[in-house]
Image (cartoon, rainbow, N blue to C red; front, side):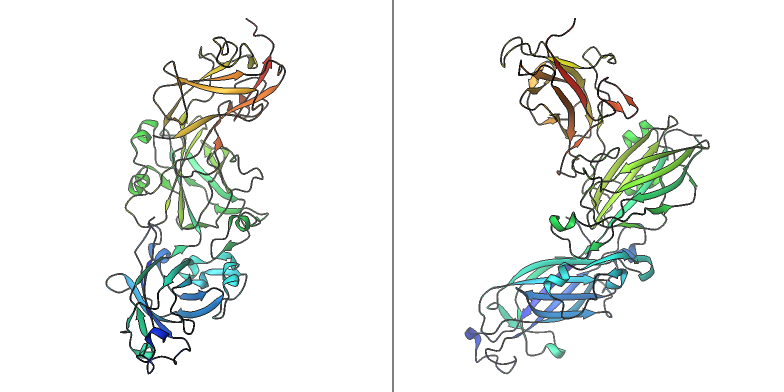
Length: 520
């Protein structure tokens, strides 16, 4: 995974262990009393992403804590001399101390904190004698990246240290008399927040399209310095008030037609900039959020409490205002979520996500997300819009020639993105009903993937005694960039314009009722 600020630590360990007693007694604190460790650290400070790259990659202060178990064995703090050399690396030395008389391989945990002054309203004050528990519970309520000139970063990682693999130190200065561990360990600093980009284009020229306001809903109260366990992460409370990201009306001057969009290289930042208006002149950072949706048009099925971030966009076409809510995916640290919005004269917004490692790569080609291109609503086999509630009828046992005669059958197409998987899903009635999928007249097995050829999906009744029972049929998918909880596609029209009668106002399922016989 590509990230910024790769850290190479050359750990030079000096220990007067039994195996080496007598040869270094003049250079360490004393035989059997533990030994000092000289650590050479090289921090790779790469120049970075498009908006305020220097700020997003700067290391203006750095703390390093080292532990064996719960015991702190080393500490470093630097606020000066952190400028990169000609090779782009920041170098400094750190001392550790091994347990006395230890010749065993040690698991050393390192906690690195960069740019702490960019964190406002912290839960505690960082200090030299912090425990591991205090570091892992540390959080902050706001960041001041632009005011401070850097983004907070952190990393936690363990490294096995073999005190038998030593060589003479070359650190000099106060590190004279120490031995070095003859090995290399690599760390990667991560920005502890995510980043949001909002790009807009009109689908046609002369639409007089403007973005009036952009607001983030579901803002969280705080963000952990070190990424917590899921059980802790999901309990971060939200604020009652939204956060305004854009308050001044701005025109959309770029036009991106459907044909142009098909040809657009969505992994190329320069192509995005040429085809879309960027509405954030300054970076927008987001706290990590456990909850999110894989569908920009609705809440994710896993987010039953509706705790994911929502971007509310107010826009106008020829002076007529409308509002669109965009449901963001799970927000993770050091990730850049780019939202591409195309607005048409019919007041329909097409939204695509792109989620990638937040770095200075020439292309966002780590991970891409494109909302699936598929048929909505799904229609009967004759292609006509339905005008009666959908039904299914038991007509034969499993494997019989008549079992599918009473099936509820629809056509479904998903043509993009390439390799996108989907699955027919029964939300109720499991056991009394099953789904089968056909393509080109042949029964096909999962996994089902996007294809230029349409599919036929059949919901089949298995229980003759289930007459009157309701089954909710849906189609789920998981974005290619996120294999987490699947989301339901909208297959029953849209809210306020439901295609299949009898499904209430749910656009993501079709409600089917089992009957005793099919009316001809």
